[in-house]
Structure formats: structure tokens, C-alpha cells
Image (tube, helix red, strand yellow):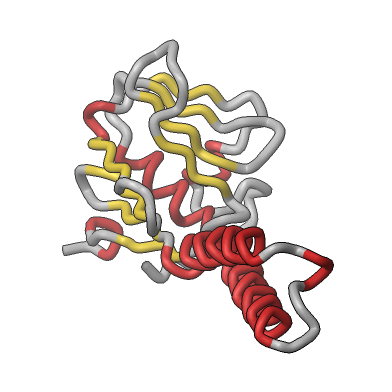
Amino acid sequence: MRADDMPATYRTSRLQRGLSVLSVGALLLLAVQEATDGGPLLELSLVNVMLTGATLLAAAGYGLRATVQVSETAVRKTRPLWTDNVLRFEDIQRLHLPVTTEALWLYTEPNGSPDLSIEAQSFERFGSLARRVLRRLPQHTEIQDPAGRAEGYRRGGDATGENQTDDG
């Protein structure tokens, strides 16, 4: 089996993981401040501290555990506290590469909202991920690419056409 035929898993980017670690640090700071005799940080109530903590934990979970897996038949996005999102390539009717951000928006209905979106800043090796998705799309899939990024991905580079390694 060729390396391109094997399923590939893409983790969150270093930036996302770094922000997640920062949110855990902020949560620990809030917990320490709450536990001291000084009282709640900035006069926040205990309920506000707990809600903030829960939000920071959810953000940290997303940043540390979210993945996108591309197999021969489907693309799957998994995130903690969310239902897994799985799209079979044969069901994808439209792919949009937006101008304002580097991302893939996948649609199963031609005129609806994206059923799955994958942002470059959120996942590592985005050029490799985009290349795998583009190569597996069926012939009938409409590709909207006003910024002209798709050809660069198909050639094996990122959006600017630079080469990058595909190690997964």
C-alpha cells in the first residue's frame, strides 16, 4: 500500500496547543487565587470562577485533543465535548477554499452551510491535509477556489506553492 493510501491523522497546531496550555495555566491561577485568603480574583464570585474554569477546560481539551483524520473513503474531525463529524468523500458536493482565511469548507448540499470546516491555523501540516482531501474528492465535486490555492496543494506544496514534507 502506498503512503498516500494510508489514513493520516492531523493534530492541532502548535499555536492551538500553546493556547490550550495557557488556558490551563490561567485556570490554575484562578484556582490558587480562589483558594487563598485574598478572596476571588477581581471580586469575581465563586460561580463566575467556576464557569470561567469550565470554559478554559473545554478550550484546553479542544486544543490538545482535536484531530482530523483523512482515510481513503472519509474525512473525520474529532473534538472533545462535540459529536465527531464524519463526511464520506462520495457525499461531498462542494469544496470551498475561502479568500479571507486558509481553510477547507466541505458541503454535502450545494447551497447550504459547510458540513465540515478545517482551518489552517488550527491543524498541523495543513498543506498535506488539503492535498489528501483534494486527491480523494469525486469528479462531480464542485471546487470553489477564488484565491487559487488548490493547484498549489495538488502539486504538493502549501497555499503559496512551497514544498512541504508529507509524513503522514
